[in-house]
Amino acid sequence: MRLLVTGGCGFIGTNFIHHLLESDPTVHIVNLDKLTYAGNRGNLAHLEGPGSRYTFVQGDIANAELVRHLLGSHAIEAIVHFAAESHVDRSIVDSAPFIHTNVVGTHVLLEAAREMGIHRFVHVSTDEVYGSLGPDEPPFTEDTPLAPNSPYSASKAASDLLALAFFHTYGLPVLVTRCSNNYGPYQFPEKLIPLAFRRASRGEPVPIYGDGGNVRDWIYVLDHCAGVEAALRRGLPGRVYNFGGDAERTNLEVVGTILDLLGASRSLIRFVTDRPGHDRRYAMNSRRAKAELGWQPTTDFPTGIAHTIRWYQTHPNWLESVESGAYRQFMDSWYTKERGV
Ligand code: NAD
Ligand code: DAU
Image (tube, rainbow, N blue to C red):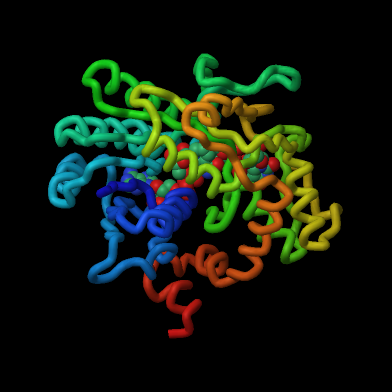
């Protein structure tokens, strides 16, 4: 299979590319990534080189000419589309890049896929498109009406609807996956879990928005990657698949677990002004993915969070290079330092 992965230098894309190249010796991957602040080419740099099944291309998914050229010149059969602006807080400060990448960029990819006769297009989306749940409401199903609340989730919902419209109107074989909050190696340290690790491991305060009672359903990133692969291989075009981790936790519980794993005091917790429009609770019903794709999450939260914290502890150069900005210089950043060359 010859695959175009977009946004492969981000958190989930990096884990997905590692996972697929290891599990399928026949797959060839072209990774199209703009290298925004969230993209780290060094994550996959060891895979680059002559004869490799992995090719990196720096570029914007909204560049129609480039996308068409890549699909044709690499004889791409399928697309897995991760590229996005992904941070809710940033979308509140400036939503323009979210519209550019998440809406316009997705539209460009869909048009190019249609023109070039792509066999499968997996559009990777999020539980946030369903809005917010009350404490006693049942988890989101694929039939829950879309009710996004942030500029980020609104831009993702727009792209989901475009993707599904391309299936209904043109027969483009699109599948939409919607997943809950991921955690694991390579997550950019603006997100709650790596941020709490970074601060608490240095004895610095950990900010918790509002009262800390907001609930997320946490899934280990490789379980999400396995779900995306299952949708790619066995999903029905035109269908939406939810993936959740069956691990609802309040933010206070998550940060408490991290502090315990680090042997740090709860006194590091600082309650700060809430995120505007902060969704209270997300929870996913993944019954369809389990029944139709044979998928299920295999890493429970206690195991996954312990592994994740261990990964950040044993990869201090990765975090340092992100914080210093060295990762943006690519090769001479953490990757070469890590290998002592
Ligand atoms: P991320 O922010 O870590 O990575 C995004 C990647 O996309 C980066 O490498 C960035 O350089 C690239 N990118 C951004 N704009 C681009 C453009 N115009 N052209 C090409 N590349 C561009 O994101 P993530 O957390 O890995 O999320 C990946 C996808 O999964 C997103 O679509 C997100 O909405 C979705 N998702 C994320 C989560 C989560 O918990 N992180 C949960 C559900 C769904
Ligand atoms: O639900 C899936 C979504 O999960 C993805 O679509 C998004 O791309 C991803 O960023 C994530 O969104 P969240 O907003 O849920 O993730 P974040 O890590 O930013 O925040 C998790 C929770 O923690 C949220 O309730 C806000 C809170 N928070 C976050 C930060 C950064 C804090 O309390 N303090 C913080 O410093």
